[in-house]
Length: 198
Image 1: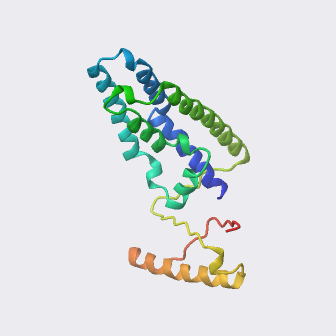
Image 2: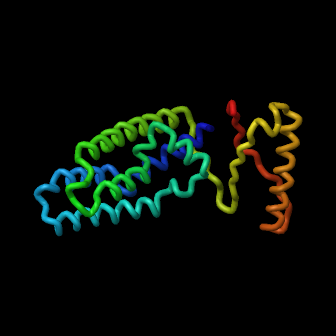
Image 3: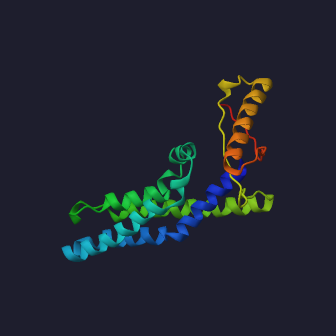
């Protein structure tokens, strides 16, 4: 994965934690969980409904919903999967059932909170380091469209000539798409190219 894409993911994660106040949400969930024995059913239901409303908004509005499936797969298989906004939202929605006795423990919520704080500190360090190196998120200009292609090595067998043919096919396709959209055939611009062992 190219560095600017990693920077974009890190920025999005930090931004979503701020936008949805996810750290505060975890703290509030921990408080509700710890206070359950002293709450009457009405107090518990009111507190849980507030938590679940916020969690549902996270599921419906977080920026990661718009990510490509392969990027989401990488994130969900990574060590930060436990602190992704959707994971936290699902934890809260599933962790507070109707019966307060069956709810998630504050100790378990605090484990997620501790992990989130740790990862966020690492992300801030990562973003500062990349800023010093001059690596930044690639922004797609207004009136432009970006498309990521993932070409498995099996379709060009690591041969540059075949790779060039495949890229030529995509280039012709993009020219046709731009002609349909704008009325003129425009060349596609290659901004980044990266490789992996797969």
